[in-house]
Length: 255
Ligand code: URA
Image (cartoon, rainbow, N blue to C red; front, side):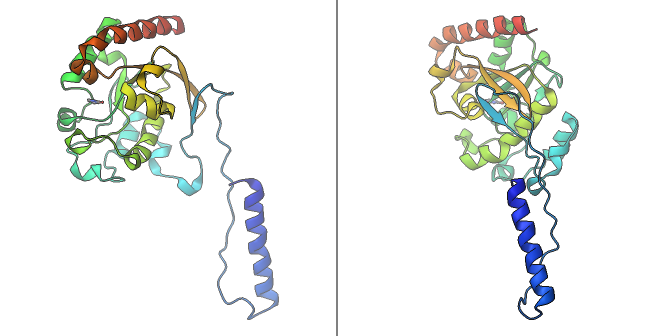
């Protein structure tokens, strides 16, 4: 809400209060004792090239988890989330795992059945391949933080629904605020398109470096194939390796 709008609402209420006091009987409803708070203007980085996200600072949309000051706090505040139907079918909320102070955050789509059972991201077949992909660029799983856009498993591994994405992605933004990574490695079209707010196919998003700004922190985004897609289509392993070389070169220059 702008300062101007809140001033207009406050003035209108004050005017109605005046009418009520000086023309008794004219208004027969109660007026709220309202002092409108104008939310702090969100701080965003100078003209990022691409996407800007703000974890709501407005009191109107305030939720406890938004004030979490550490990743363990955040996990405690959101692990019983019941904002969407996935909370009813999940076995575990999959918060993410790895280095809470990582330079690199790896983002996938959503937990699969093994991840849902263990409560950890990328622990099934695709997860094993992810471990190998990271090792190929001299990284351990413990060096990075690994998580997903959705924290709960869509039943039968169906595609995430728009309302599930809408409700869950703020948690990822808050994780990014707390970790402060330098780079996001987005795995697969779903993660890349959701993060970058685009419908461009994966083929167009690979090989580029994007800016993602969340609450004033500028993070670079590099996109590659999802390991599950590489298991289905080994022909993509070569372009995926090119993506990882770009990622490695870019990261070594950033350090
Ligand atoms: N696929 C994903 O996108 N994430 C996981 O955690 C596992 C499989």
